[in-house]
Image 1 (tube, one colour):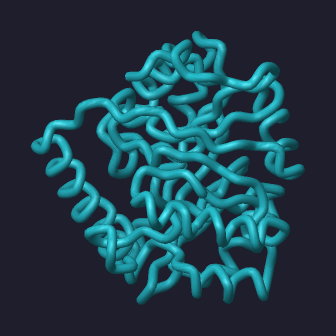
Image 2: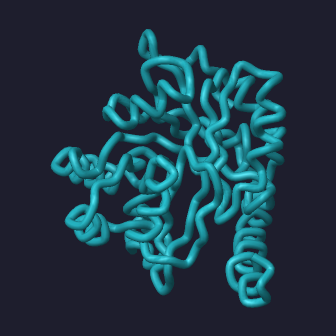
Length: 258
């Protein structure tokens, strides 16, 4: 993992990791491991945002007491099919059910005084074909901001080509008042190996400082560095995503387990 002292952080700003996954969904590390690794990276605020669950929050908060780090309770929520677009909820008090419309999901986040963030927009297959599911594309965002404002959008994430990132940055610049704060996020699934690939910096040190900074659009996205991911580990993670998440979302739901 890139050493934090090698990353230029503005004076008075701190590092936040706002999009991470653990073994409670399709991540490869436990909440405790992720918190420890975030502490070693001198991350001040860590959001646990597992897919459609918040069961890892308690373990993360317990471990965080040993480090100079605050946990933000979050969730990455899949909205209704067939698009199944994802919305990131931060500063939540309890989980939000998946499978509802984007507008309903954002409304439910705000009922908890949480923040609604658009994760990994403009994702493309093979860096050329816009992803049909999960990720908001330009036309989706144009439609969304005609109906509601959002609190922030990941304009820095590791699934963007150089050209696509330039298009996203241009779109953000032209619609900043409606798109909210700029967020950099790793969408971490492997802990230390991808935790700092992208991150957010904000003025202050605390989770409350972060909340205020997002509200005031004072955050900045920063590109970090990826660690070395072995192909076998990537294959295992993808397999986990396709199986465990599918069972939780559809099979368990149909059986009344969730």
